[in-house]
Amino acid sequence: MPQFPGIKDLQYFEVVFFDLDNTLYAYDPAHKTALDRALMHFAMQYDMTVENTLNLYKNARKEINHRLHGQAASHSRLLYFKEMIQALKNTRVLSEALKFEKLYWQYFLSEITINKEALKLIKQLERKGIRMGIITDLTTQIQLQKMKKLKIENYFEHLITSEEVGVEKPHPVIFNYALEKFNADAENCAIVGDNIKTDGGAEHVGIKCFLI
Ligand SMILES: [Mg+2]
Image (tube, rainbow, N blue to C red; front, side, top):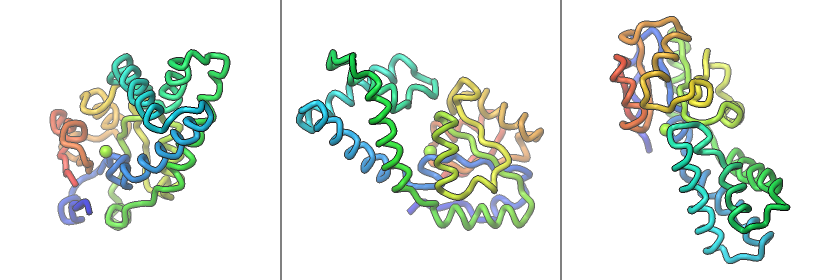
C-alpha cells in the first residue's frame, strides 16, 4: 500500500499537484487485466497463440516508444494495435485497431478505483482551501475518462497533460506550465507522485516533491 504524506506536511502549500497513474489509483493490475483481455481478443481474431500475440504487442510498443519517445502518443494503445496489425501485413483491417483500443480502455476503466488514502488527503486539502491540479503523462482524452471514473474531477482546478504541453515529466516545461496555470510560485507548491524520476523532476523547478 502506498504511503501518502499527511495533511500536516501539505497544509502550508498554496497549490498541491498530484500525479494520476499509480498515485491516485493502482495502475498495474488494471493494465494487466486490460492488456490480457485485449490481446486475447486479438489472438482469437487473427488465429494466433497468446504468446505470439504478446510478442507482437511488445515489438509494436517498443517501436512506438522508440519513435515517439517523450511524447504523449508514445503511450497510445491505438498506435500499438495499429502497429501490430500492420506487422501482420493485414492492412485492409487497419481500422480494427480502434476496436482493440476501445476494448483495452473499457476493461481498464472498469478495473480502477480511487486510492482511499489519496481521496482522504484530497478532501482534507479541499477543506483547507488548498488548490489542486493533476500533472500527467498521457493523452487528455483518456486521462479525463479516468478522472470521471474515479469521481475526482470536481476537486481539481486544472488537468495538465503531456499531450497539451508537448513534453513529459520530468521536463521542466510541463511543471512551469502548471505553475503558470495556477499563477503560483514554485516555492508555494508541492507535488505528490509515485515516480522519483518523473514526478521528482518537479524539484528542479523548485516544487517540493512528496513520493508515495
Ligand atoms: Mg505515476
